[in-house]
Image 1 (tube, rainbow, N blue to C red):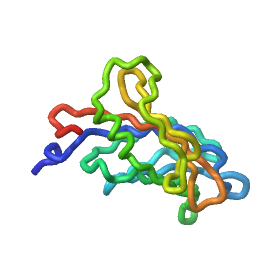
Image 2: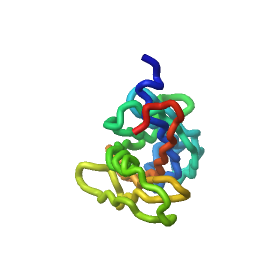
Image 3: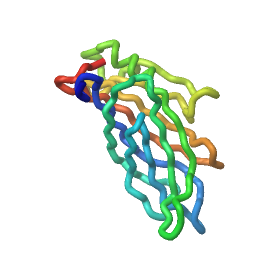
Image 4: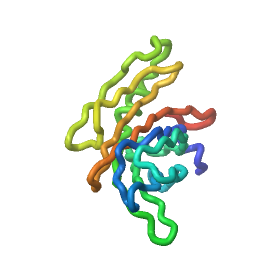
Length: 168
């Protein structure tokens, strides 16, 4: 069985920025983000001496199981010691996948398809909107980091269908 037999599509995660991240060095931090989906693990570049970093990086994952959460960990890069953890978060992809399965088309740009509210069981810092944008379904997410004194990370999810894949 090949990867294409199980492949549903590609998830593009745009890691936009960090907001008010924790200080882990003397007066700042050198943050980067590690994203994990199943066994896949990708990371952003390090932004030096900045607790409000702008990454604006696209990381892409192959999706074979729509039930797996997307895990995010922020680290402080250190030259001479182990990188310090600066918090983590988890994103449930199911609401986004459900919106994709609606097979919508031709909606006015900016149409909100679904709203996910912050609660105790998710890491949302504010409402997350799944919306129609440029003929695609995207989800903007602001995550409050756990296991740290402060910090948020903003990301955006976008789906890419692959010809020859199983699809949703």
